[in-house]
Image 1 (spheres, rainbow, N blue to C red):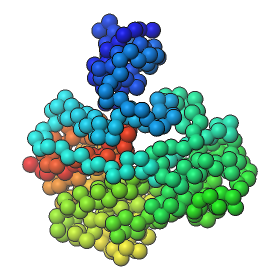
Image 2 (cartoon, rainbow, N blue to C red):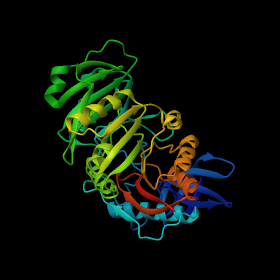
Image 3 (tube, rainbow, N blue to C red):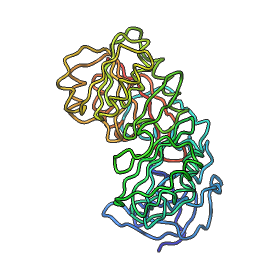
Image 4 (cartoon, helix red, strand yellow):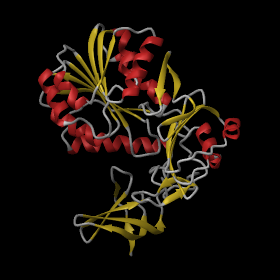
Length: 403
């Protein structure tokens, strides 16, 4: 236990920073300027982690959160801020990381706000343990039972309130919702015999399907989403952005940065959303995705949107790029959080397309990859999209031009 610790700053994950005996300490739920008592929870050679046991002086920026699970579950990190302060945190985080990593960007960084910073999530993954539903406490397997999630849409919260109708003792539950409030449930559980109270569940939500241990037991294993005039079919195991409003803002940014009659290669293409958005301004598009259902969705989505200039290819990007013998002048990247692998980076530096549009959900791996590309590319445009409101995560939109 340590008393009267002054919080100096915030780290990239929204934790307070202080120093004890010249060793840095990361303190959960502590804001700059606050004076607190702390308990060390983790001690490493170069740093320690701690929790607050008492507040002696609180920051004027601190607000009372509506969420009863804040600082317990492993979800939202920034609910001690009002919404505009969370955007300032993210902007300062990016600026600081750019400076520390010598990322050359001289323009003002625009932050695109989320018009609905609560109830924006259209996908939520939960745990069911001993017939209770919730999230794991951060860095543990301790379940924090919940009744609702302030970030999730109302239909998703309706499922949470009625989860007992699923009659599951233990397992994982992913709830996916469309903007039309349709619900697709994905259940993985060691419970072999399902006993879902289907009629009662259907009276609570607009249920389109249930996938139980990878088998469709009710309805269909996909749903439809309509954004900016496009219709998308999305399978239960396909990637799709969780925030429709910010996704539409992303579409606008993307389309405004595609030159007329471009030939595009998109890597990590999911259900083909970005390729479809670019199709009207492009000559030809090649798209690579690893999930089979996503490729099936992509071809279907192109057909129902009357688009015929995209070739969708099934394959792991790192194993596929070396086999691509195609010309392209624009490269679109939207990788998972781990960013680009060395094989893909080397492929880019071999091909040197004039324009790269890099969309990233992890600023740290993005900066790592930008450092790799900076020998040949300038960062022409960078914007923050608040895809994941009230968390330390942010979506980045980058345009790189060949020097």
